[in-house]
Amino acid sequence: AGAAAGPAAGAAAGPAAGAAAAGNTASRDAAAGDAAPHPAHRRRGPQALAGPIWKALVIFLIPLMLSNALQSLSNTIGSVIIGRFLGVHDLAAMSAFFPVFFFLISFMIGIGSGSSVLIGQAFGAQKMDRLKAVAGTTLTFTFLVGFVLGMAGVAFTAPVLSAMGTPASVLAASIHFGRIMFASLPVLFVYAVYTTFLNGTGDSRTPFYFLVVSTVLGSLIGPALIFGWLGLPRLGLVGAAWGNLWSTLLTLALLILYLHVRRHPLRVDAQLVRNLRIDLGLLRTLLKIGIPTGVQMIMVTLSEIAIVSLVNRFGADATAAYGAYYQVANYVQMPAVSIGIAASVFGSQIIGAGVFERLKPLLRAATLVNYAVGGVLVALCYVFARDILALFLTSRHTLDIAYELLMITLWSYLVFGNAAVLSGIMRSSGIVFWPTLLSILAIWVIEIPVAFVLSGRIGIDGVWVGYCAGFVANLGLQYAYYRLVWRHKRLTRLIH
Image (cartoon, rainbow, N blue to C red; front, side):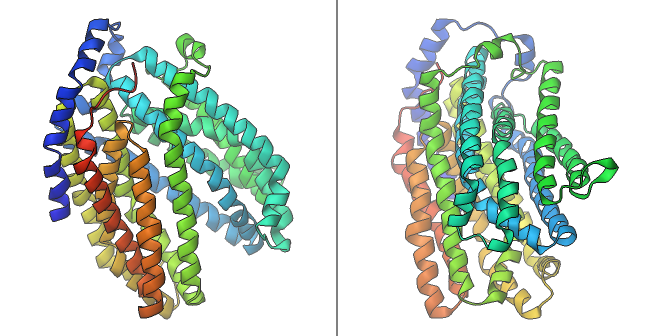
């Protein structure tokens, strides 16, 4: 309760001071006389600027959480198909490739987060020309980066996987699978950032609808290529990679067509085509926001490797228990991750529109929604933890370890969500470096050392306590920076 009330109460002075300090910027923008937006744009105006913010948050959150859940479910089902019908050999080949792939995807996630802030601010200000400029620069840049990384990946897949110590028995299959996935990067990057653009305008429903389309297409095309249905060649594991490429490409084409028919502000029209170039000023701002987020994703990935290394010391049962826990944790943390994204999107729109007094109710509403929605999910998991874990585990001893892990850590995901709200709102103003650095410090200075020390003293439970310590430390650091520094800053738009 104290953690929930603290940040909300602490917001009182910050946004008000920011509104006064940014008054000159808002006045200059008004005097500049931006062209009036198209009536269709007005109808799709920012949700954050009118009505109860908690209601807009919930409306935005539901499709976003469903998207995350569907993505996780799709990944789980894909692994089950590969493991059960092609065998452990092919599952291992796919698994060996994904650490490298995720490393590259982390960069794209960072660029996407930067573009969502700029898109949100442009949309909040109803500056459709700048919105198109951000979209054009981001699309061009991500396509070029995807092309370069894809070609480099195709060329160096074999030596990289060999250097990682990929078992010889699966190396050839991993290389073949990896080269197709690398070649797909330009399409995957463009589709991913386009859905991020839509989230930046407060539209989380359209990305969800097309994730459903992508999942359905992938569920049809992937198995058809894997098993050789309908006269298609039987490709085995690489059929999964080809299926992923074709389903993404078709979904992207359908998305572009849908946005055109709906006359969406982000549709591909003559203005967007003219902006398919790199605006160096926008690119610098984009990278300033995006690179720290990408680095954070990479550091989180490395921390998970460190945690797994600690868990592995306690034997195969502990490792299996951790794997089952992670399946559950992916769903438990969805409200926290989603509310952080929502806070960043809505904060961007508010700052773009110059109505800084809305930041205080946004912080309060997002914090309360985090504890309300996340609290219900955590409570259900506490009650049904054994039944859920039994879906993944048959060994009683392994199940007991996983159950103990959930009992120790579940509550801390609410704290994680609270920190995500604070950092999301600060990121929406373009302040990214310090929230990112503080998150990394919480992991590498608190979580990992605590897990290491306590695992040597009280056993495997010490690893789980490390998670909680890291989440609590991150909230404390984010709140301290927000309270002592961020709320005293002069808030201005990044889009002019």
